[in-house]
Length: 427
Image (tube, rainbow, N blue to C red; front, side, top):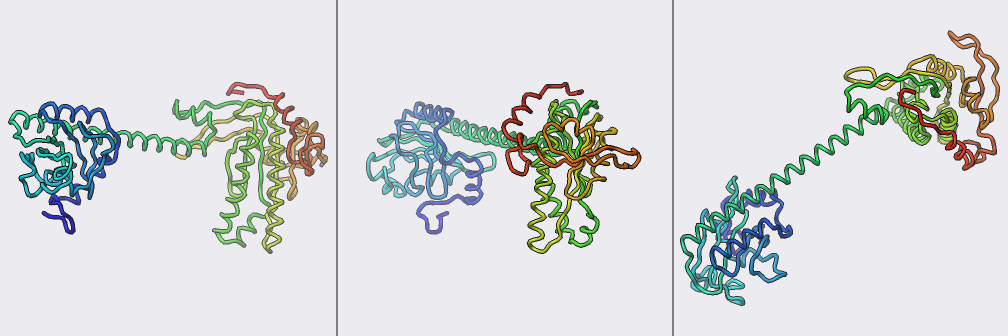
């Protein structure tokens, strides 16, 4: 059939054929040795100076492989080549004398240099019945194509299709591998959002996680004051958006100081230092994180008040002690810690005052050389009796990089680096 507005014929399944050409993703690609070998063999079998593997697009033809064609000729108009006619056939098109054939005698390269006089083209029909292009040979003199040569060209055309389909399958395998790799990366990223890196690696490799004892960790709890009242006053979207804003920033701060986020429960946020890194400086790092968290919330409150909205006041509590850690659950598993240190840190938070950081005696003894603290005395703690605690105020001036005493200076960072030691995963 003739194409509407076109001066070359179209196969009956042209739309499907073009879709197949796109699927093979071969049009416009660089030379490949496997196809070049086939055109060299085609020229040898037919004793022809020129042989090509052509991929036929909608209006142009890509010379995927060529023997005897001058460099620089890679694409030609579909309307200017005999392959447009061979593409519509189920078997080889042989034109003994192109100058004697009204279909071709006026075409470029036939009516003009190099004055091709002979053409034979075998359509490259894939297993789905789509003619992707042609394997063709050309000569400068009229001639006949011997039966044996014609059979050789047919076989080479089948090999060309096999090469194209192998190429397609390899591309599909590569895409599948890339998709699997991307899916694995997404799964790993999701796992790392739930579990610390070393724990995630152990769970992936062994299918379970060995419980661990940590003789010294610092547990940090935060909680918003009067959260229940805020929950009543805000819409669900506003409430979730506010919590997400705060907890996302807490995540960033905690990660920057080398702590491990453990979980959130409602408006409470829990993290710990010293679980994975095997460092002795986790009390100092945890206190630095606590001060930065408080600074962020206080600064946010200033913005809330400026626009007439209710501020969010925070309590922060820290305690340093021993814990056990492990992964619990089978479907929605979670990494968690247990021990009296967790309970004491929670009590430090619950007995704190708004926008303050409350630390236990144990944490104070670890950090008192680096931070200014205000003694609170011994306060009654539920189920614990009286416990000594302190407000964590700021870094001592000699260790602070800022006037507020929140950011560690180079002197403290070097000091922290000097206190680091490597512990086993079991403590």
